[in-house]
Length: 110
Image (cartoon, rainbow, N blue to C red; front, side):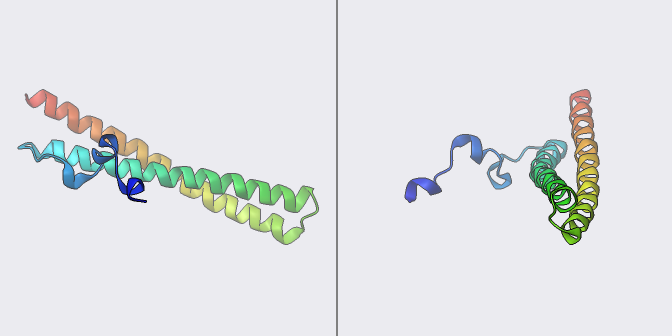
């Protein structure tokens, strides 16, 4: 059980409290935003999974005789999960652009 609580060196790099503080606030902000983007990518994967499950629910409800309620719920969950996926995808894309712009600004100032 004790071995399960140990983290590897690669995993420790992700935690913000173990980062070394630098004089450049752009570096700290880029690290924080990168960590936030990684968390958003987890939610994006969950959104994709919900989208696939809602498609299967709708297909089962309408095509396989699962009933009208299951089909309608599949469509409703599908639309909601599609909205979540689109919002997260746009947020992650813009966040990556922002991190890249910060890193370019930092390199230009050196």
